[in-house]
Length: 256
Image: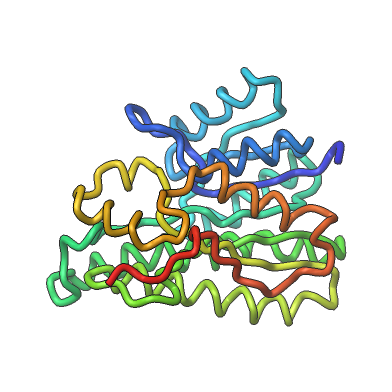
């Protein structure tokens, strides 16, 4: 895979927090020999992730990209193409959850807060994909991965905006896959369930226990277990897989 380039949004390692899913994905793709571009809204977290990967002997670089800003996405992707000549993989992992863990009802969230969450979690994936797609179409190859959630399929009280965004990514995956498949580009979606992250570490204990009890496996996932599915989807082993949304939820049967 020498020379292939993978871009992962939302993969920064933020200070005083453990690394999240974006970093886990970047690490596994780096292990497979891809040049990894770690992106986040701010450069410092992206640099922290990239430095960690370089210390392990992998080829990685950092870039700040505000996925909510379509123009900034286009400029940053163009800069990457000028530097590396190609982008083979895009993983849309950036997300924002303002009403975390059942603390806010829908009518309590302001319109501005709704717009903020939609701008990052949904439009961020649209913006990054739109910026990368012309290059992939020109080359006639590419892999695009959306990171959605099981909340795309299941009702979750007080997580309405997040669920809307993640459900839209599932539809976006299927629709875009049908559109660009004939041009050699595959598009798939990974939908994690409960997972150990810096966000879930702050969950109220009763809610965390409810998540765990709702799974057939009786535990939360490690980020690496979810990243493994991304690793498969962008590999040649998944060459005939596109338009799919794969749940990685430990056999989740619903919280309530």
